[in-house]
Length: 202
Image (cartoon, rainbow, N blue to C red; front, side, top):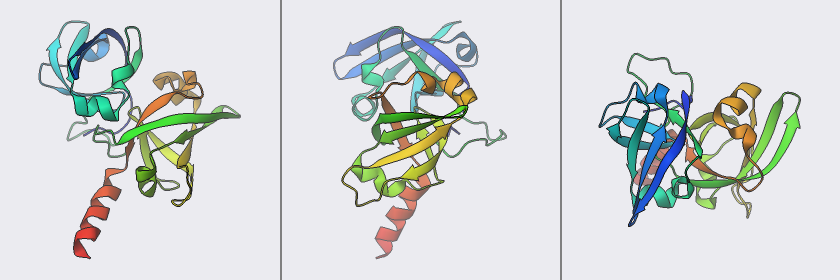
């Protein structure tokens, strides 16, 4: 399990498609020093397994399911990615429950500067709209953020907004996003469990 608090940024040094799967090697000396083969790591919000590790980098395999739901298939050499190691059982819980199981992709619709912060508006798949609530949590490229405004469930186009402080903008690369940039979205998993349980009781 992750918390959506990004601990490092890495750079793609190998992006190799192999049939319907992909192999990614990421240069990240700080993270590589703490990773062993078989360990889980969140890469732009996608939970993956390290299959090889060096002193400065590590390699992960990405299956078709992850490529279809996330933006990982569009990564090229030189791209920067957000990294987070799983939370320890005795660790601090600073974000929210993030599984690293991306639900879909969103698109940056607009950016508005508000003092030192920035308000970002994203689209999201219509079937995810019911899980997104004002003042709820959402993970974008693995970043735990608070939702400040949402579309109505019945709206033809689903959207939500977040307000991001300078520290997060700089640490995660959100400050470099341009209109049209795609992001990985993971909604709060608690909402999905409740919906499933309530449906079975009807």
